[in-house]
Length: 328
Picture 1 (cartoon, rainbow, N blue to C red):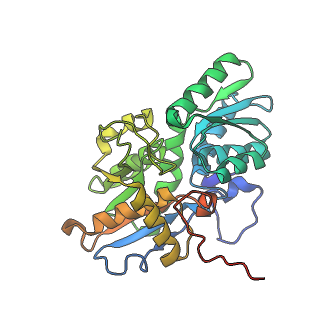
Picture 2 (picture 1 turned 45 degrees about the vertical axis):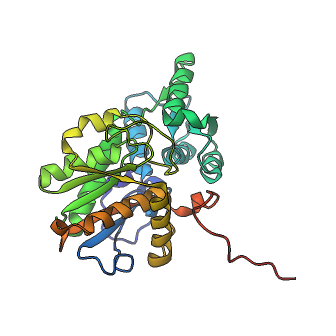
């Protein structure tokens, strides 16, 4: 199991298992979406991973726990998630031979729920009003009740979450651009991606601006109150340990509305031909906001397409089905 850090002599290779397909994702110059922008906006296409960007963190956290003897074939790995980490864990459970139990808010799209189940994991849906906080508390309680057979992966606090991005995502982006990066826009969920990338890039060049995006309806990282929002994948309703470790690296936090996240997901889909979800829409919106500022004229801004929008097709108000017709 070589994983995302494997050296590849050629882009065409035969993988030994799906872990070797994690990482080495391309960058896309989004010229069509940002045709009139004065800045260059690139998107890291994390939907090119087997399931999503969360494959990186899931592999890192699980691999380290297995090395430490905390996960064996008899272990039930437990995690709370808005969807993508749970899908990544479930996928890895299928090939590495452990059991998985995933706690998710009932607001998570049916596609994400079914994807976790498709890999053989158990899904426990929690009340919507509890946000990710409630799912996490329930997962922890289950592990406390079953200490001998479970392991709580703890993505919101686990340093191995960020380590995946410090050792793979960041170096990839640096190599792909030759270090020509002025700002990086990242959705604030567990903040593992933000933690790992901010550490990497601030070491490389402290002038690179690390910009977070969170839901305007639940601006907890900005010091506001937890509230309802529709941007699944960010805005967990709590400040995570991952965020606290790199709070000093935050250069700005942008607040994205549900409507803007949905609209930009549709724009990515219609302009760039990549079907995107709301969190990807939110970071593209954030990149577009930066591009309107004078200080970013001629600069390079990177955002993320975290996963495929196919897992959000059932979400009301995101994608239209008004061009489907029946013919007798």
